[in-house]
Image 1 (spheres, rainbow, N blue to C red):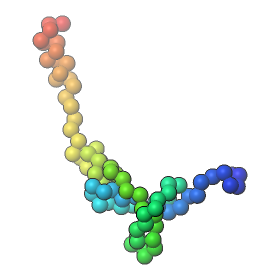
Image 2: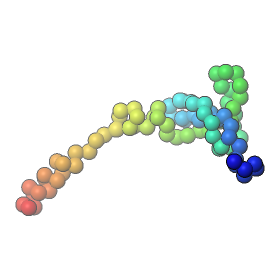
Image 3: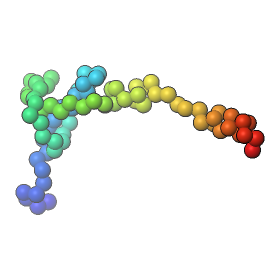
Image 4: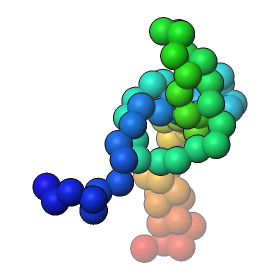
Length: 80
């Protein structure tokens, strides 16, 4: 890799504001906010609206639409 052309890659905490879930990972994103993590160190904080802790697909609260029933009703209604 060439020197001086890549962004800084640092530890960052991403926090889901709806479920209060937080994860420490590495990213190139910049943030003015910081948070004290479990290990006692302070890291940049990025707040997100949706994460795996609050997304309906991952929590099991999503709804599956029955498209097959709609097709059958359409065929029955219009006769083809």
